[in-house]
Image 1 (cartoon, helix red, strand yellow):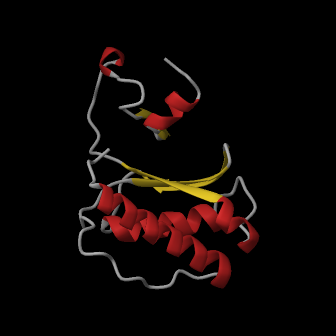
Image 2 (cartoon, one colour):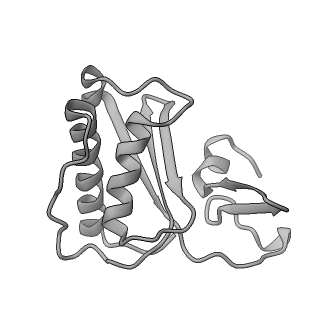
Length: 144
């Protein structure tokens, strides 16, 4: 993941929360002012919603075509309303949801021995199929 300052992380979380609440309450993604300290580079992002320890939605882009703030807002909106594994988030749930944002670094080829659990995520490809494992998933499930 790309290193972000604490202020940048808080601002991204604020953007994600605003996009989620806008989507749930108004069924649309309203425009928001992007804080000046949020990097405008393009990178992959996943936004995960949690209710307690349970996943409530997760949507992301492995590679982004838009600046970071735009991608975070888009993914937060979609995680709340368009994750096909879950019913859309309701207004009553908003206060209980914790938002987690994973900003992806550029991908590079590694051997299994080079992978550090909790530090590296994995993108595994075979032909047209691919799967992504975010670094925190292995830690959560106590994988080694």
